[in-house]
Image (cartoon, rainbow, N blue to C red; front, side, top):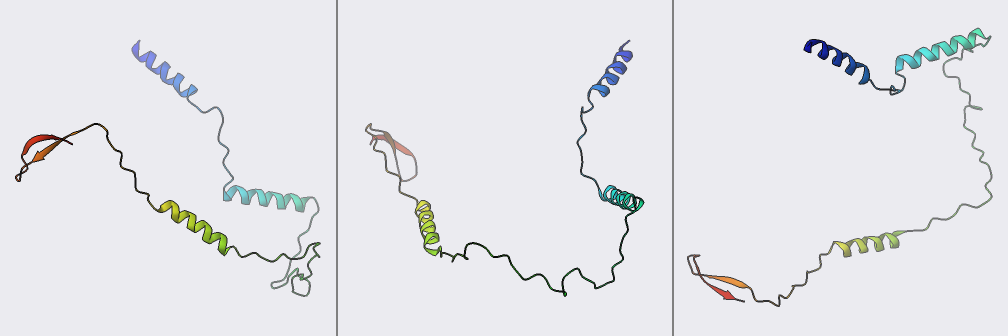
Amino acid sequence: MMGDCVSICRCFMTFTCRPKSKIKLPPNKYQVKRKLALDVADFLARGGSVEQVGQGETGLINGCFNHQRPALASQVKTRTLLSSEIEAIEKRKEERRITKPTPIKANRRPTKKWIYDDFGEPLRWVWV
């Protein structure tokens, strides 16, 4: 009877302990290559064609990039030097780094202090 309970509990645990939703992982290289091959085959099946381009050919006009830039409405702004701002920030950081001496708290109540002899043996109490 005990063996049956254990086997039933184990079976029950295996069914309930599985995660309810799988974590979706990004595709690996094999899956990406396979999907790309299927997309190319589908493109060719729909009547598409692929041009063969010779080595060294380029899509650039006269082999150069387009150097014409669109005109901007505003002129180029001059840069402001921030060295004075940086120095001010560094100065504030230095002020924070300097440790300020802690004020000594004056105890208003007298305290006991041991008086020791030359050999480190306590002699008596003194109220300070």
